[in-house]
Amino acid sequence: MTANMTSTESVPLLNETFFHPTFYISGLYNIPYAKYYYVFLCFVYAVTVLGNSFIMGTIYLAQSLHTAKYIAVFNLAFSDLCGSSALVPKIIDTFLFDNQNISYEGCMANMFFVYCFMVLQSLNLLALAYDRLVAICFPLRYHAVVTKTAMSLIIGVIWIFSVTLNVLLISLITRLSFCRSTTVNSYFCDYGPIYKLACNDKSISSIMGYVCTAALLYFPLLLIAVSYVCIGLTLRRIAHGDEQIKAMKTCTSHIILVALFYVPIVSIYTAAFITYIDANVRIINAALTQTIPPMLNPIIYTLKTEEVMQSIKVLYKRSKMKSAMKQAVRN
Image (cartoon, rainbow, N blue to C red; front, side, top):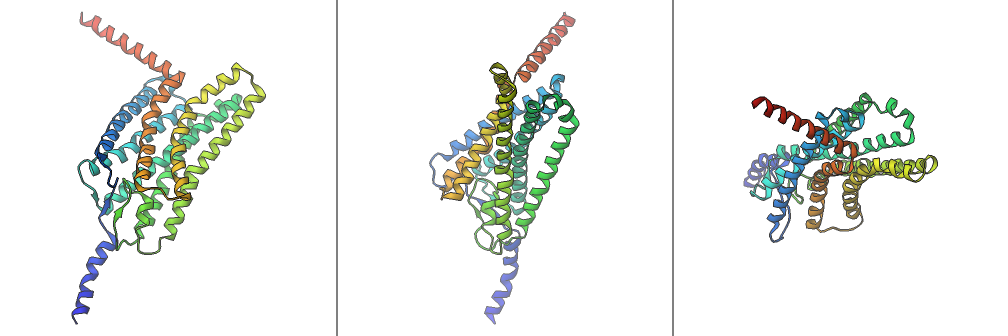
């Protein structure tokens, strides 16, 4: 009789944990002075906010940058800013202020926004590769093919795809039951470490994890590599010496951005498939991979792109002229 009562009374508690657990984000384990690492991420985030706000403001104010290419650049800067904002402040709150417990709903929201903007960053780089491919391989058709309307449509499709895909991933997580450990061995509500905690069948979530990794990291990187092979072959055929160098200079910023974003994250995922990676090493590498590129992207576009530098100079001169005129009116 007592055993039956105990079993019956435990059902509500089990169901509560079953459907709406509170997750614990473990973060770095047994590393001295780990808080300094999180302070460093604060600095990275501050530079990211300033840099991406600056590049978006420059594109918005400079009429010469109101082109199809810079619609994609603006969206990349916006995605970098929002992606870092979805990740870093929560990391700071979690580990610097010891708030490692997170509600089920808060965890799902954190996962959605972090992954949504990661997908946007990846596909934006692919859109910029398409822009460079058409500009160099089909220069006479560039302004007819890569219009502001066409690029806006591409960016719109990327947003719809990213949001829809991440809603699907979250819905798969909500089908899972968590009846044992709820400790997430990561630095945020990471999809892989969370679905692996489930007690019921998680095969669909596992398959989707592999499919999404291949489709959103490896496949775009492959397409970008193919686009640059085509660009290289075209330049060898139709250009020589200085013309080749001049054409490739227009791609320099994009190539650096691609290397910064894809190489570290693809290396981490590939290594994880092949061998065991220590949790602390994985967390540090993954966190830096998600935070350093958004910080460097606006710096690279500012320093490596002549159009942007010229627009900044024009805006600066215009600002000085306005200041001089205001001063003259006051006098």
